[in-house]
Image 1: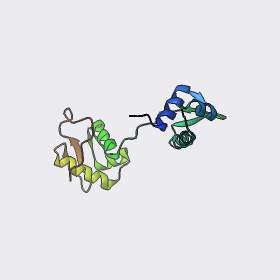
Image 2 (image 1 turned 30 degrees about the vertical axis):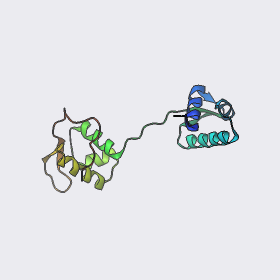
Image 3 (image 1 turned 45 degrees about the vertical axis):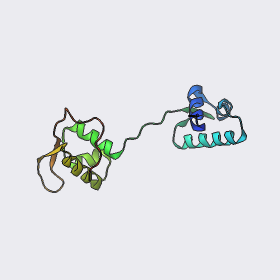
Image 4 (image 1 turned 30 degrees about the horizontal axis):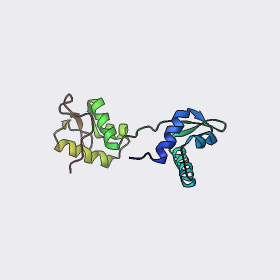
Length: 144
């Protein structure tokens, strides 16, 4: 599969370390005017995504994009770390909405991965993973 222009820009920026925009544009292997225009657009997108960040006056550097975890992945990680937890704990730790967490808890109970340890009123039940040693590292899919 041919390398896309955004990948070419990322590679050039990463190889240069710290650079000026002119130096980056010179380094990108482009053959046509359209490729140069596309490269400039790719640079703008990478700046918007904070993959290319300012490093001083008229100087920039490449910063690899951080991987964002989904809400479900953040909830699952919080459950695995905490051991026992309430829905409110998971909402607070993961940034997910209460409704989203409620649906995910329901799905995990159906799959037999989470059990209720103690009931303490609406949404205040204490939960835990049924078998913490055998649960998958990746978050389970939602079952409706």
